[in-house]
Length: 185
Ligand SMILES: *[C@@H]1O[C@H](CO)[C@@H](O)[C@H](O)[C@H]1NC(C)=O
Ligand SMILES: *[C@@H]1O[C@H](CO)[C@@H](O)[C@H](O)[C@H]1NC(C)=O
Image 1 (cartoon, protein in one colour):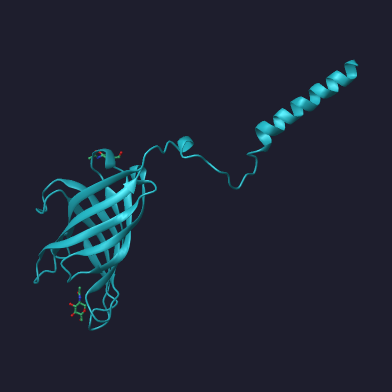
Image 2: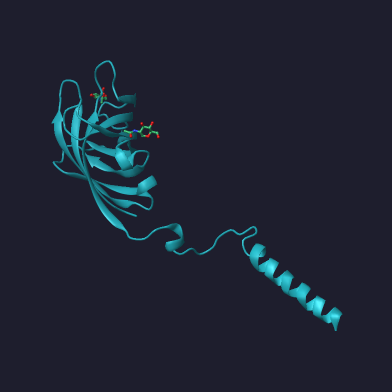
């Protein structure tokens, strides 16, 4: 009888230890509830700022990598452009647009934009939004998808609208006004 009792006890302990350790050992995927990730309510945010594409001067923030065709098709530029609250270059910095744009249309001035908004302002400091889209720079209003984000923008999706605020034909410097609408948690 004693022996039977201790065998059963051992079996129960074994089952408990399998239940505790066995289930997440070498586990590849599992279902999670939003609650356990701390995701409560989805928010919709609107961000407004000015995007300074500075190609001229001593300290350009956009640098041409290549421009081999006469039409400009294939032009590729790397950017680390500033984002500010106002259109003046010395107004409050809220972040930077880091990435590339490329002239990807044979017939008009249309850019492929691939960049991250890297924010430095307040609760957004350290968070980013990723943009991948088409920017037909001659149109009064352009729209690009926001395809993701990090930090406070985890699980983000939405869109960015851009309007040219000023363009210097001589230097190529441009300031665009951006309105970004994103869902995030
Ligand atoms: C690219 O090259 C073409 C042809 O040389 C020129 O007309 C155009 O201004 C250049 N674009 C830029 C951004 O430098
Ligand atoms: C943003 O965060 C960085 C790194 O944590 C810090 O050095 C910087 O001062 C912060 N900037 C602002 C404007 O709060």
